[in-house]
Image 1 (cartoon, helix red, strand yellow):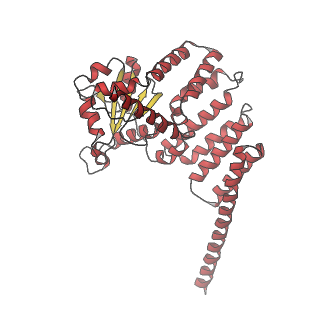
Image 2 (cartoon, rainbow, N blue to C red):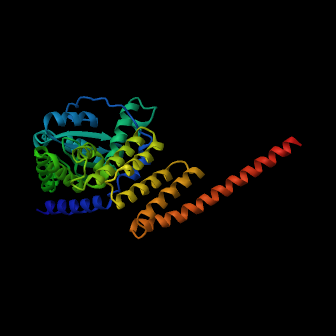
Image 3 (cartoon, one colour):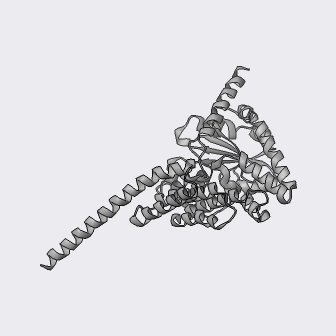
Length: 355
């Protein structure tokens, strides 16, 4: 009983940490994602039935209908990382306890595997694994995520101390209500049509933390196709959601300069609310600020911020835009001054050379 109470306290602490870590439309992941892009290549599970490649476990889950336990480790740090592998995943009763409900994947991020001097160096797999870490917002290892067969996040467990499969099972059971609730909602989505399906998809969207909504991109696309006239009033929200996932895709393809266009595209729709339009302009300004800082980009940032403010000057977001606008105008003034000085120096140098 004492140990179970300990698990419950740790799980509550974990849930609070996850809530505090929620990010707005995964924008902060973009800079990290810019460097990683790999082609999919499926692999077989190891002798224990554990996959080491996310695309492979996703394919297996879709075929078997099972959910996914996705483990992230950094084995070189030892401690709980080693206990996950030796005490849990390689235990003789692991598959007996989890095999009927879950497919399992373990991705390790030890530094050694990313060294080109390593005999196990595999650049393509490294890139795929880094993509998975970025898309799923990995902040620390070890960690465990419970996913649906489609790869939707049910819960994220910053790894709690379990020394064997039975202890891990007790930890997971603390989230059983969320697991069953997700199963029920996905069944309802599968059985719904038309605007009822739109409403159920949006229910899933709302209960999914913002930094895990990338995985729902196909469902947002469905909403856009099913409700072209915005009868549900949800079209604008999912147009923005699609803009966010498209922007992420641009970074994953190493095309950050195209990400801004993803947020400008929804502005053409008449179904975006004023607030949603403001958010589009704000996101465009934010992403432009992540690109090379130039006079041209500073002017674009100022343009987007002004456009957002003009839509609804009294909104909370407009107030934030005004603060950023003041700072960006000062940056632009310094940039113009610096360029003018460089031009003067270049001209003076040219004249001296001519003499």
